[in-house]
Amino acid sequence: MEAGLSGRCLECGEGRLFSRWLTFEPRCLACGADFASFEDAGDGPAVFVIFIVGILIVPIPVLLSLALGWSIWLLRVLRGVIFAQGWAKHAREQQFKNT
Ligand SMILES: [Zn+2]
Image 1 (cartoon, helix red, strand yellow):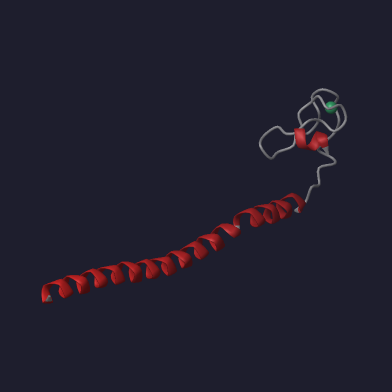
Image 2: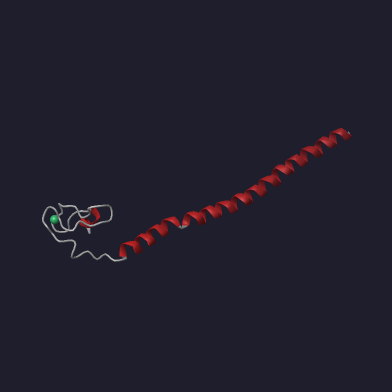
């Protein structure tokens, strides 16, 4: 597992495991281990990537939609408060004019 994480040869730990970003070397340049005849990762890595990225990414739009809902609720509350303050000030001014 450590060799797989480091991208090094599974036999000697010296040679590179990958020739390009996702392409395995056909064989280890250091010890000659044959990777080409064994390579069969299948869809396993893609499934793990989908699960991991899904766990990390899916909550973001959910949190954003919750934030939007809270913003709309808070906007209504603050509009009511500011409107009430204006109403009270106007009522006081009318009261002073009448006295
Ligand atoms: Zn090797």
